[in-house]
Image: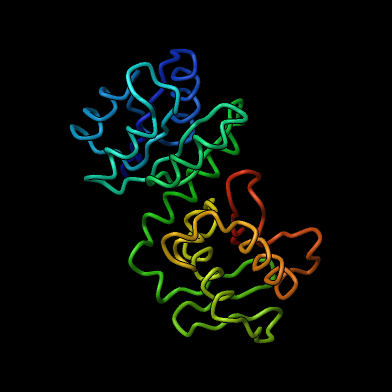
Length: 229
């Protein structure tokens, strides 16, 4: 079976080297680029299955790189960001990045995020027929039903819209703005307080312990993630 191609975009040679060694050891073929323009050229010349993109590039903002990629490809993009760069992470996710990992990161965490992104890319287009199972909860996207421990859970239309969007992106971080635009419409991206209320209601209905959520987890300063089995 052909090794999945991963394009690593980072201006630090030592990071590219460590990623190259670790990814090859885990069955990936690795392409490399040291700046944004080289990344765009490499992605066009030899389209990868996934891109690992550092946000701090010397020639252009990594957010711009992601935005330009999204003009012609839906290849999964995982961004690497410095700790505390929440605004930059959110901007990257809002223009189309699939996930993020904060430096310094562990390889097991990055590899797990990569597997989720690749699975999601393979399943795009078939989400309507899927049943998402996680932490004793089943979300039947085709029938628009939600069950916990085999019992149907009655959700309001807004609660279901939030769960549906999180389930369609299971395992991936979803920003506050993405959720609010999808559920409440354009112009409500700043209504984070209202979103927190809905999330709290959902946790009461779906979590074994709403005070210690294991299904809908908070990504501080960024948004939420639904942990899928």
